Amino acid sequence: MDHSMPDMPDMPGMSMDMSSMDHSTMGHDMSAGSTPLPAAAQSRTPLAPITDADRQAAFPAVAGGHESHASALNSYLLLDRLEWQNLKAGNALAWDVSGWVGGDIDRLWLRSEGERVDGRTDKAEVQALWGHAISPWWDVMLGARQDFKPGSAQTWAAFGIQGTPLYGVETEATAYLGEAGQTALRLKAEYDLLLINRLIVQPMAEANFYGRNDAEREVGAGLSNTELGLRLRYQIRPEIAPYVGLTWNRAYGNTPAEDDDGRARLVIGVRAWF
Image (cartoon, rainbow, N blue to C red):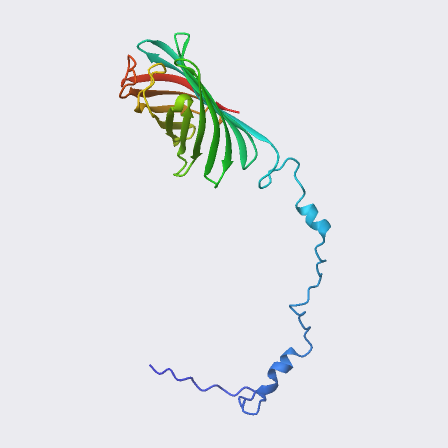
């Protein structure tokens, strides 16, 4: 195929000779008479400088707002377990309550746990502890523990640590020094696992160690007793959640065993916080 351009016919008044055109002036001729654009660095409506009044209006002070290491007192109460348990010896009511009042760094903690069987208190204790935050995940605890049952009342000095080091696992490790040189150690951990919206399963474990036998208070030296639990709760709202579950309690060494030692207990209860 012949792709050459055909000869163009001569048009009257039109010359195809462009050699005589001055291309150097074409740009100037085309822009002649046009309106120049405003300089990019120059704003048509310059902004006024920001004043302190502008900053205060944009970020007003919030009454009662939370500040870093705020000195305002806050409080929290957790009814972690309030439950009915079926025992061979009879029906039992068990509780585990904790709460605090204070600021971001220093707090007064209160703990209580115990068990009543057929209207009789078998176990009961209260702790008052000063907690000091040493990191975003750990608090050092120092205070006292008072046992009311079993046996005669006993007072302990308490020192420990608590926190959430691994993926939200709530951990407590507390050492105790009691009367007549008795020593004890309690390890405790629990975790909330969200199954679906509002449905949560909570595994927990607790172990108690004692330095020597104490027959009056039903504890043996070494590993004295353990408790494992698995509770499934439904949050009616974030502050309140009924639950059902199972626990396994076991005694070791010279610690007297209960009638249902090592057997599963059915538990039904409620968890709430304020």
